[in-house]
Image (tube, rainbow, N blue to C red; front, side, top):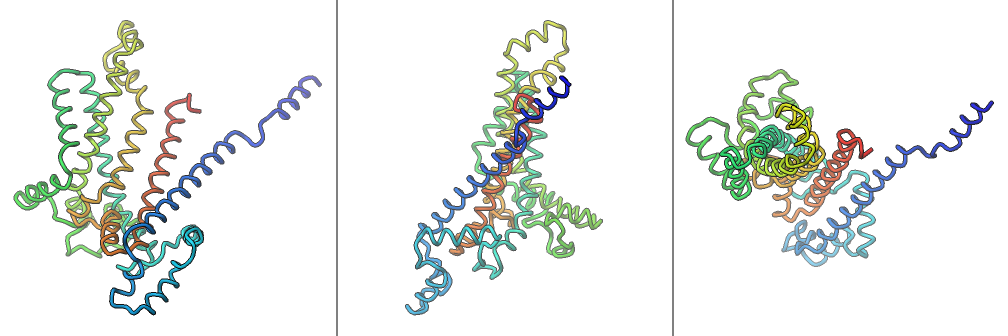
Length: 353
């Protein structure tokens, strides 16, 4: 009877709703508030920019009557908050309007171009992580040595050199002179349209189709822009990894581990590196998000049909529906990467649970 009473008391004291429900609700609420703020800011930017969307549609030679009619059809005669309310309703339905450049729904255009940027940024981040993390660790362990000096120079050059200049030099040397890589674009003209899009990423789609000729051609085209973005990511990741590791290598627990007779490899990777994993998650997530958003110049130089070049071309053509739609999608990618980083915190750091 006493045990039954205690069990009932424990059930009565159980939190309701459960903690995971509260955490999930708080996370979803935070995402909703962030996205609402993003939508409002992008909406205001679209309204305050010195670009008249009506003129972009009707042209400068349109009569005042036509201008007034289109102005009313677009809802620009309504109060600003009313315009934002209708804009918010459209976005929640996945309707970003129609692009003036392509005459297609902006959502369809984004679904077509975003996988190209995702593919390029993912490969660039993988290169940055696979090379930048070991380089940063090695530079911290061999502080003051020639390896450390080389790592610092590599990071400094990566930060200092404009990526558009590196892209032009890369095309000139590796494509124009040496012929080691493919030229601008995702595929050679001969292979364009031969692979039916499944994911929108050429490497994956060609592998799924078993067409290894197209796969090799896609690799030949993506290797140079991905390497440039990877170098940019490597410079940031290696620098931050070195800084984190230097802080850990000077900690007392590392000295204690060495006194106990642990091998240097175990001290570095099982103790010091383990304690910087959570910090590296943030660094890698920010680097990945930066490549998704900041690869505009790379896409333009290499004629890469991604969301960066799409937004740029739309902005130059006063296609504000496409600009706002692309900006919202990039902002959503930032938010989702931050949420994913928070989830990884709980995996690698039990204290975060």
